[in-house]
Amino acid sequence: MLLIIAWPDYKTNTDIAKKLNITPVLDKMQDYRRNWMQYSNSMPINRLPKIIKNYRPKGRRNQGRPLMRLLNVCDQNR
Image (cartoon, rainbow, N blue to C red):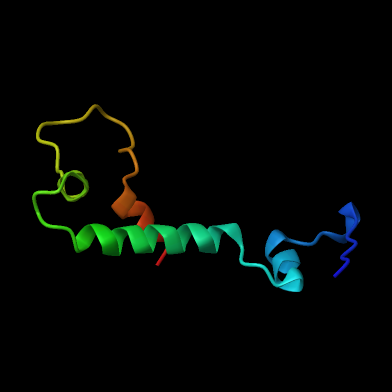
């Protein structure tokens, strides 16, 4: 299918992806994260990825916005 879109048409990436019948990249990323979370949750508790996912640092951080973690990003995408 030939799709010709000029710059002044103001089409979003999601509109173009729908016309071409392809999955948007953000959806693929969310699926990948969701699959990884399910996979890491099914691991035994002594596996390193599960230990890292459940790690909670002790102590205090400097002032400022805390860094984003994988679990925070997955919660935002729901």
